[in-house]
Amino acid sequence: MRHTTFRFTLDPTPEQVGQLTRHAGASRFAYNQCLRFVTDALASRKSDPTVTVPWSSFDLINALNTWKRSEAAGRVFVVAQDGIVTERAVGLIWRREVSAQVFEEAAVDLGHALAAYGKASSGTLQEHRSGFPRPKRKGHCRDSFRMRNRISRSGRCHIRIGEGHARTILLPTIGVVRVHDDTRRLRRLLRRVEHRRPLTGSPALAPRARLLFATVARHGNRWMISLNVEAPDFHAERRHHPPSVGCGKDFVGIDRGIAAFAWPPPPMAARLPDSTPLGRSLADSAGYNAVRKPSRAPSAVPAIALKPLADLYGNMRALPTSANISYIGFRASWPRPTAS
Image (cartoon, rainbow, N blue to C red; front, side, top):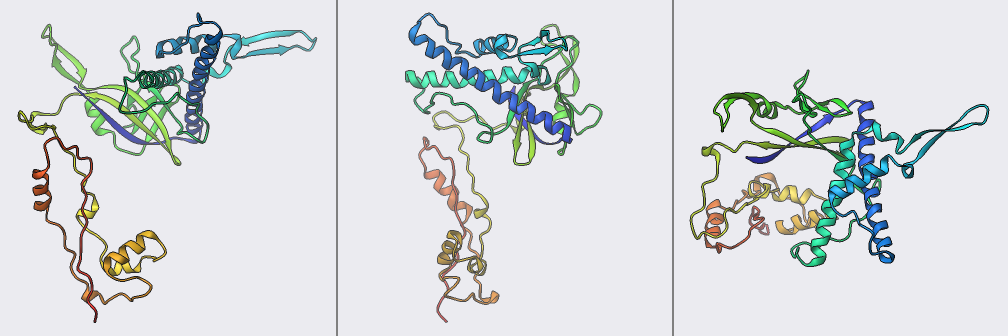
């Protein structure tokens, strides 16, 4: 099995935009509240060593669930006309307006951040430095939240794709949300197909893939959803061939970029504003400045000389087998203009 992600652009209604914003705010609130539990426990532990600090994700979820139903989260009182005050509700009043999974996943995120900080402090994590988690502030962090695809007792998933309409996603508490993109590839993976059980050999109907998580985030003025799917492996013909013994690294990824295929010719580079760094660099590489020297006629423009791919592949063969290459790029070149 392999893990892959499908990303779609949501098309929510104005009411659903408010619900998405409310869920993102609840996730940020739960993260900061769990972080407050940790900092308060660490401060109390200095005077009382017996105080337990909720450090793992499981402890943070239990502490948050207990706090949500306690008087510390808030109380609602009702005052009658005769002056009698009655306590009406205890706990976080608006917690039922948001899916409970949002609170739990925020606690899980903080648990992962605390675990990374603990490894970095003990010296176990040498590659990356992880500091102590900081509170999330509105406007300074991305509005996002995550939901798990839980399965009910009847066998139905809480997050469903293409129910009623092909381009829809059903989210808990929020409801059916339209998407801009086509969901056919994902729906084919989640479609029930007949297969044989590995132990008994009896036929059964089950989907080929399994939807694990759904992460909703705001990007500018749009809401995006990323679905984490556990899908079957690719066909044998589409897989990479296994590396030979003693070849070092398994694979090397190369991002040649658009510069490998085309580059602005000298007239285009000369027409760019000379006050910008890009305009100055392109004008200097073309051999003249856009302000001091006029551009030549289009007929006199030399052809763009692209670097042959054989040179790139030849240089790759000369690299050591243990080289870790993350990016290789090259640009087109043209001859400098001659004085007329």
